[in-house]
Length: 278
Image 1 (tube, one colour):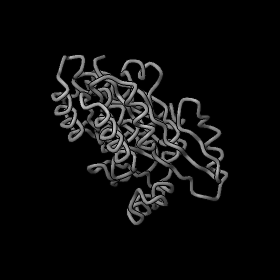
Image 2 (cartoon, rainbow, N blue to C red):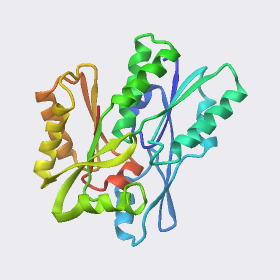
Image 3 (cartoon, helix red, strand yellow):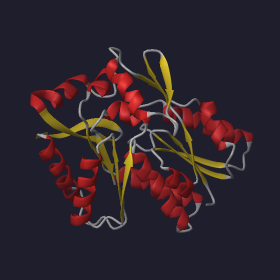
C-alpha cells in the first residue's frame, strides 16, 4: 500500500489484518499489583485477567509514549495515518499527535494525519479498514483524511459489558451514570457520544440485551452495503457469533469481522464483554 498505518494496541489486529492494513501497533502497558503487562501479540490475556480478578487493586493502564509512536512512524514512507483511542478516554491520541509533529519536523516531506477514532477496539478497527478502502480506491492523502473523518463522525459504537467497575473507578465513565446503569441486575447497552461513554439503554437479562443490540443496528440505518461490522469480544465467542449470524441474516453489511479483544479492551470489557462498531 502507498501508506503506513500506526495504531495503538486497543486496535486489535490479527496477523492477517496487520499485514493487509500495512500497520504497526504501539502497545499500551497494563499494570496489576506492580506487575507490568505489555499489550502486544505476546500478552497472555487469560493470565492477565486471572491476575486482575485476584487483585484487590484497580488495574492501571498507560498509553504509548510519543517516542514509541515516533519509532514506528520512522519506519514508514511519506504518507502515514495514525488511529488512536478516543481522546476523551486516553492520552494515547495526544501522544500520537506529539509524535506526528516530531517526525514531521525531522522530514518535512512526510504527511501524517492522526485520527481520533472517538471509539475504541472495534471502532478503531472499523476506522482502519476505511483508510484501507479509500486507499485501494486511489484516493489522495487529503481525500482519505476528509472521507475517514466523515466516517468517524457517522460511525456507531455500542457495547455490552459484564460489569462497568473498571470504567467507573478509573474515571472513564461518569460514576453516577455507571452505577445507575448497573442497578437492578439490568444489562446496560452503552454507546459512544462523541468519544465519551454514554448509557444508551438497559435490557433485562443477557439474552434480551444482545437481541436488542441486533435491533439497534437496524434502528440506526437501512443500507449498510458500504460498511463493515466489526465485533470484538472478551472470551465470548457465543454471543459474538450470535451477533454475526443475526446481522448477516438481517442486514447488508459488505463484511463482518469477529476479533478477540487484546489486553486493554479485555481489562475494561471483562470476560463476556462485546463491542461492535460500523
